[in-house]
Image (cartoon, rainbow, N blue to C red; front, side):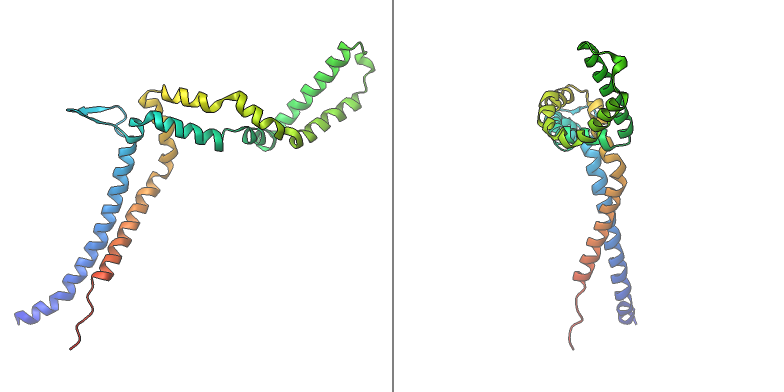
Length: 212
């Protein structure tokens, strides 16, 4: 009878082991991703334990990260092409166009007056047409300014310098929000991948029944 009980217990034990593998993989994946995210940004201020300094990995390498982050941001986001595109076609585009028309009209009137022309004799409809043409044609010619604008603004060097001078708290607040909204997704992804790894291990650890 004991032998028969042992035989009946084998499938049950193997089933529990399979469950433990999946659950264990899920827990390990979840904790690994959670711990990795914590190690990137915490602790913010350096903590010394004997000769060892413990601090968030990004914060330990503030100078290197500042350079990489500044380069990426100025090359992919804060560049002249994107700035102009946002001004011309973004939510504030109509306001920018209205301001440009107003400035152009003021410029034309002032230049006419400076050359001795009577402002009262100016053709208002012609001035309005000139202003509309300036707004219409500007996007076709703005590309020639991109290289000059990027070089003149010098955002890459400015951002590198300012980020290197930030306190650990300020530096953490610049970088951490980029990850915060996706942290839960990353942690859950780790749990899912861990459970999948446990399931795969379960499949390959099951031995096929021996032939009689």
